[in-house]
Image (cartoon, rainbow, N blue to C red; front, side, top):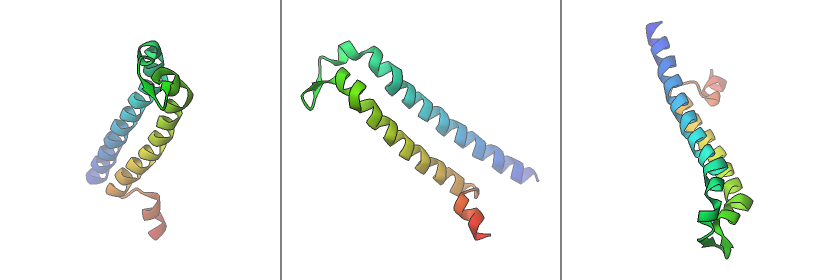
Length: 91
């Protein structure tokens, strides 16, 4: 029983760490990039000022990448601790 609790606690700690990392990255692309848009506009990407590009497309692209990265990383953690959805189907 103690092993199951420690395994559950370790899984939860890894999940919390991953969630915190994702939220920090999300906050940066959702707010920090836009707060510094005037400074970023000094640079250009694909011919657009970087601040304008990040507001119009760059942040949205980052959010999609974050979603896929989070799902993959969470699945790896779940598999490592034996709580993945596929593992339940085999039983």
